Image (cartoon, rainbow, N blue to C red; front, side, top):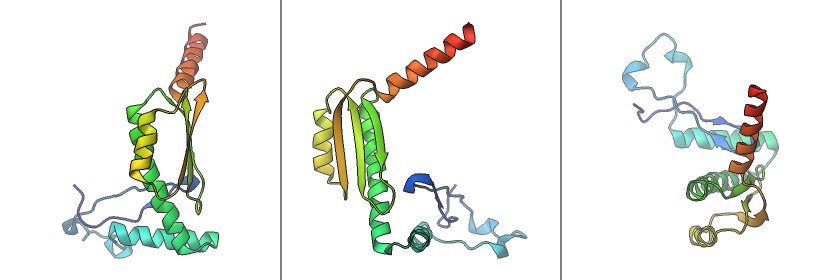
Length: 154
């Protein structure tokens, strides 16, 4: 069970943050190694990581923070779209920090519900919805699996 203290998040590739939280109860930090570990709240750890990323990339901390907020918000939005329309998404990407741009491409037309949801949620960045693709990501994965099975059985 997670307590109020966490280790620092790990910054992943493509500017997206994947946070790996290792919960540690206050009663268990009295081991032989605890004197070498600094425990921070998730908020403090996130701010420190944003500051480090900004310094490394020679960017303004505010711009990096806004970009990270956008990326996290967009990730939740995209996850919901994928859940609601699993066979429709043909591509999805986010520009790297400090940009606040993302694209979701669709097989066929962009679903009206996605357009409405994007307008309603007012993400703090630029999200482009494009339709007209022929294959969805699910279609492509299915095709790859069929080829893999053909190779296995032949």
